[in-house]
Length: 209
Image (cartoon, rainbow, N blue to C red; front, top):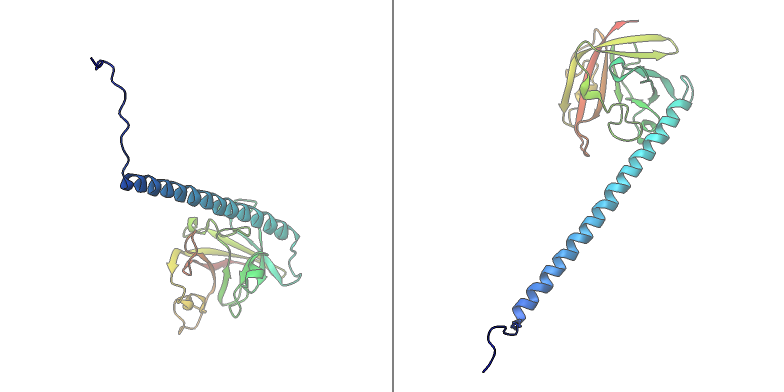
């Protein structure tokens, strides 16, 4: 008589469909693994580039001197800390923005009636305007040049505008048809930490010279 108390295990017969399913799952697993490796490489490379660009920019900041090679002066914003002192350079080309904060061509000079407009990186290359969103009405922005020190007080807090709204650079920001009667400053940077053409804008008025 056969011993049925301890039968041999039954080996199931795998159908072709089952084998294809296993291969499909294996391919998906490898796909996720490859995607994860690529993500780690991209993120790691981005972090490395970010750190290197900041280190390079900070070295350049220290080497820049007002009046030399297109350096207009320096910018200080007390809310950003006592150590915040960044060179202001002529034009807003990528090369110039890697040296400091760029002065938009065609806008007013520091302390003059009109709009003294500046741009700065929000991420990387020293990221001088990383904290621009933290500025509040009443905060001070101090510009020092060879002709003196100009203190502006923020009158319009952080506002996001589309890249097409170039009238923020008008002598009266947002009102290009109006003649200016005050000395203003406009600070601009990217509206988001992610790549975007839109801009975060803060406006101040000269209150001391």
